[in-house]
Length: 317
Image (cartoon, rainbow, N blue to C red; front, side, top):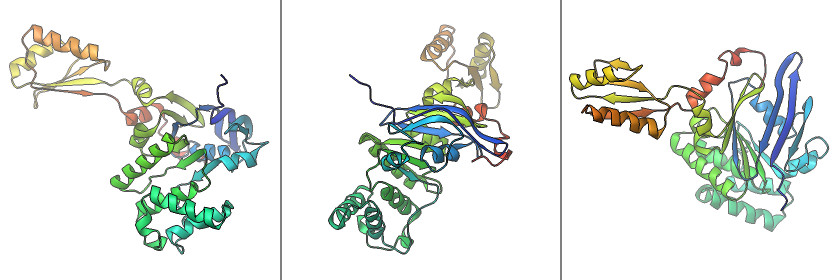
């Protein structure tokens, strides 16, 4: 059985603007039907990566295939297979939601009946039926973002590039957009996501890559990336000073919080280490009033792997 080609595959991708190197030989291999998230500081090269993969900007070097097509030799085929939703809405405020979708259908030459049918389908899918014939200028931020994404789906793309799709949305609208994105992937669509919200990448992405100074400094699942960063600990809070003192004497490298009668114990984050700790305390009859486990999150990963001066250097995008 032949393995289908990756949705996106790049080798040695390079781009510079003058003497400023934006992408310094990055490699990507993104399976179809998955969500891939690219993280990085402002100026790390995320938008430039999207522009190259979407055939909007030429690379200086490297080989790239999107939807099985070479982006240089077969740019038209690539464009037919993809859709791009940028940071800023492409909605026409002078049109209604339905008219915006029909306009896109006309650009895809779907015909009058086909275009109206596709518009109705997307209005239903994106919960915009009630506002379909209202001017887009009256839409809330979340409604505009849903309409913007719906417009990019008129041509049934196989790959969608989402460049910070939930910027400016309130938490409820952001969660609604996450549900829509998950639904698209369940239908077989591949999503390439850039975002400033690390929780968004944690919630959605099958794999995450961290871009800094034009290089990929880490790649893996959210859990794999978190395990690369030290800092897991168990916080033990005690009801009595005596139990605190007994635990502190038997445990190594603990940090004390006398005011709250708590100890912070380093851990590797495994269930085994937690069980061992509790067994040791139980053996000497030390009672723990409250226990919490802290593990590094993607914020910790981001801060550990990226240079804080990245956003200050050059004009990389």
